Image (cartoon, rainbow, N blue to C red):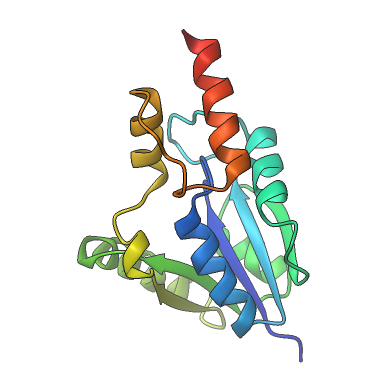
Length: 162
């Protein structure tokens, strides 16, 4: 049986921390589906199409991934894709509390789906899309913290806002 994991998120924008989790997840699963949340109740900088395009550009060297938008319950998406697991990255203890609650609710909604937690590499343990956006908006450098295409896209997007 093919082992399929779903790596969900907003990816607004995708960071090198996401890429680190993805790289390790692709070693554990035959296929990883990057599920980009359509409705996430956040104030996104990039729209869904832009986020999909940035993820596609960042992930072009991976051979065992698929990228798909999703809306509604994550467990329904996972089930419809024939996946067995949800992949989540953890940076700090504060992440664990929230992620643990989500994992338990997902397990209650669909007992056959497991949640796999991967610890972020220490060099990315502070990194989040929110921090990236804040630094970029204040004209700080995010080079080395996001894929090059994302760095360029942030500069273009924020230049338009001025």
